[in-house]
Image 1 (cartoon, rainbow, N blue to C red):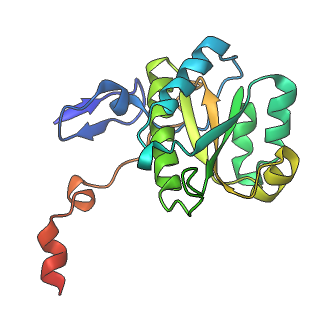
Image 2: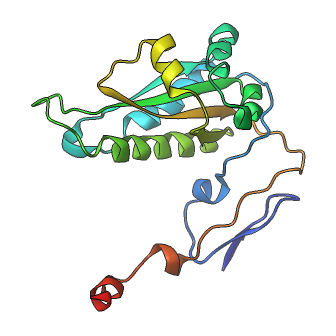
Length: 192
């Protein structure tokens, strides 16, 4: 069993040897206000750009705030429970077009595809020494109004990006067991 030690943080235990960047990624709430250089930020979103999608639709878009005045706009959308995110130097909102460009029909996979894109983004950020934390606790209604987000776009999540403060007050959450996540097909067949 592989373990990742967080230098004072809880150890996570891995049943299999997987990519180091996946082992190290988690969603902290204690961010420093250290700026993220624009080149690093662009590389993080470049990774998101290369996620797979249904019919190569690439429905995701990220509204990114990294300048102080712009970040303040997104901070104003946060709900009280996510006030910790106000310290993050970068905030972004993931949105996703909910119709196909090719035929204007409903895209039932846009949120799945956007989630995949976010996963790529979070791993590239970790590889570059940054942490990310996706959250739902913000006003989507205000975001749509203030940012003029079109009605054919679903507002998915807000993302905090920055460097984690290594204070020792936080630790990664535990994960469900592999058996809970990887369910043998016969489990459902036997239930009938």
